[in-house]
Image (cartoon, rainbow, N blue to C red; front, top):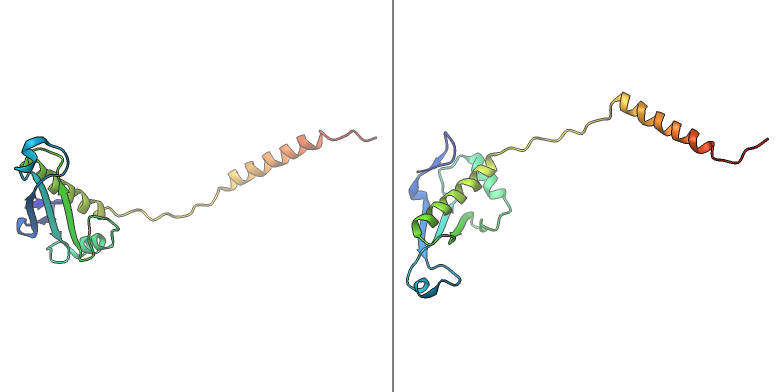
Length: 137
């Protein structure tokens, strides 16, 4: 059971984990050990609430393919267990990120006092500049 929040969790049978060989340099052992983890999670077939499903499917994330499947590859660590935990944590963070609702921005107006101060400073600056002109008789 992968816990997302206090009332939302994902059963283990909905998350498909498979061990694959890691990429990159690693010496003689890299060709023998499958320590990287491929995590696959089908959003549409999951038991997540509809709110989470809709927000996840609207995300423009390279880890989510056209079929609505999240694919995460974890290969940072040398052991399969640590990579498994890292992949599950990244899935948890991705789902938690869509749960946060952004506050709507309301445009604000300048206060009457700030408008008055602005105009007064412009008038004052204009008077100073008018004194720079030639003196007329």
